[in-house]
Image (cartoon, rainbow, N blue to C red):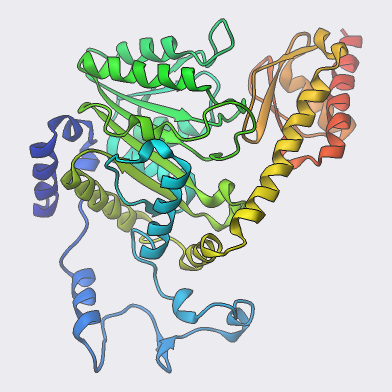
Length: 433
C-alpha cells in the first residue's frame, strides 16, 4: 500500500475507527498524489515566472490555445475559464458557492461539521465514487423496493454488493421506517450497512413528511447504537422540487454528526436542480465531526476521480458558477419550479376522477418528476407496449403492476389527455381478455 494511503488511513483510524471500517479495500488503498507530475506542476505554477514547461495543455499569446469556431459560441467567457483542466475536486469558487447554497436550503446543517462539496461528473458518477470508496463484495446495499434500477448496476454489478430491499410504504401509505430499521438490523452480524435514501423518490415522487424523516433518522441512530456501522447516502438528485407539506431539505443535515458509527454522504447536483441535465455537474459532500476525517476522505475522493475521469468538465462548472452568482438566478429558478408544481397538481386533479378507481390506484407522491400507477387489471409491460403502438404514449413499466409516469416532461394542458390515453389503453386490453 502506498505510504500516502497509509497516512490517510492512520488519520481516519485515529479519529474514528468505525469510519475506517466503513471503507472498502479499494477505499483504503486510495490516496491523492502529492508527488510526481501533479505536485511538480503545482510548484512550477507558483515559481516558474519565465517558462513553465510542465502543463499538459497548449498556450498561445498568454492564454489557452483554442479554436475560434468553438470560442465564437462562448465569447461571453474567458478562455481561461473554459479550456484548461479543472482541478480534480472542482473549481474552488463553484465548491464554495454550492456549499453556501446548501446552508441556505438546509437549515439543519447550521452548526454541523461537513466537508466542502467535491465536484463529480453528475449524480451517477458521484454514486459510483461512493460505491468504490465504501462498498466491498458482500456488503449490504439497503434500498426501498421502489428504486432507481441503476443502483443495482452501480453497487451490485460494479462492486458486488447484496441488495436488501424493504417496502417503501407501510400500511398507512407513509415511509416505512420500521422496514428500514429491520433491514439494517439484519446486518448485525456483518456489522456494516450501506443505506441509500433517495428523496424525492425515483420512481414514485415521494418525499417523507417531517415525522417520517425523524423516524428515519431515529432508525439509523438506533441501529448504530446496536453496533452497526452505517454508511448513509442521500441521493438528492431531485432536491428542491418539493410541492407539498413534506420535508423541504435533505436528511443529510439531520444525519451529519449523528453518531460515531454513522457516516453521512450527500450526493447531489445541478443536473435536475438547475435544469442542466447534459452539463453533468454533481457533488459529493461528507458529514463528520472530525476535520481530519473530512480532509482524508476528500483526498481519497480526489484519488478515485484522478484515477477515473481525472477531472470534471471545466466549461460546465463555469456555466453553473455564472448562473449561481447571477442576480436573476433565484427568480428564474422559481419560475421553473412553479411550472413543475402546477404539473404535479394537475396530475392529482385528473386522478381524482372516480372512473379511474376501477383500473388503478396510485402511490403517494408530493415532489420530484414522477408518479406511479398501481394497475389493477392488466400487466404493466403489456400496457406500456400497447400505449406505444396504438397511442404514441411512452411510459415505464417497473413491475407487473407498477407503471411510472414522468409528468415533468408533459405540458400542463396535455396531462389530462395523457391519463385518458392510459385509461383507454387499459380498457382496450380488458376487452381482449
